[in-house]
Amino acid sequence: MPDFKSTFTDEVRRVAKKEAKALNEIITAQGKTIKALTKRVAELEKKAGAVAPVVEKVEPTDVLIPAKTRKARFSPKTIAKLRKKYGISQKALASILGVTQFTVSHWEIGKNRPFDKQVAAISALVKLPKRKFYALLAEKAPEEFATIKAKKDKKAAKKPAKIAKPAKATKPAKKAKAPKATKTVAVPAPAVVTDKVITVKT
Image (cartoon, rainbow, N blue to C red; front, side):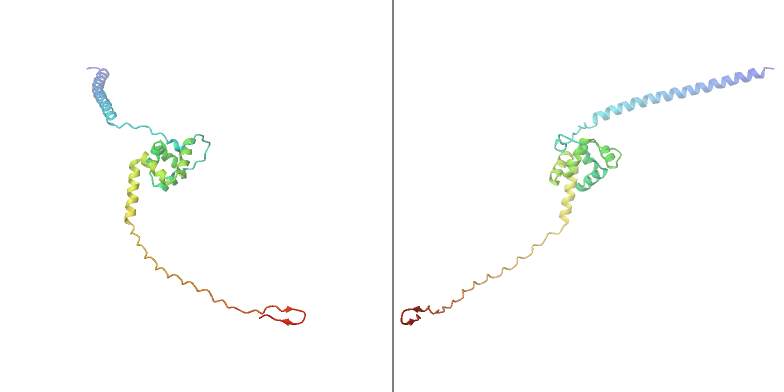
């Protein structure tokens, strides 16, 4: 009768080798798949890099940043008020300031604080007249400017035209009053005294 212990051990080894071999085949197949996917990703990244437009870094306009800047106060509400005042998006404001939309978003929610030069630029934008601001917007974010202009034109077209009021009738000129007639009053002349007789001139 064969030894049960040795028979059981041999069977376990045989099954273990079989499972290990199957597992190695799976690992090898997955390794090949990963290698093929890695190669494919590299090819796609290369193609995407060739197709993607070159984005130039936009520096903040010199007119917005004074030569000497000091520690300026900044509030996240300033960003929100500025965007609301001109009706612009975070992306458009980012284009004007030469930063990313992500950065402007963090400023507005108070997660980050802009540098002193950027705070000075934001303060200058707040004080900038609307005409100059929109000229700057047209230069840095032409698409946003075109959208805002189209909305304003559409809104202006909906307003009814003002009816000109009729001119008021002019009143006839007043007649010049004739000068009043002056009355001549005879005033008796003063008496002249002589030696003998007093005469009165009339």
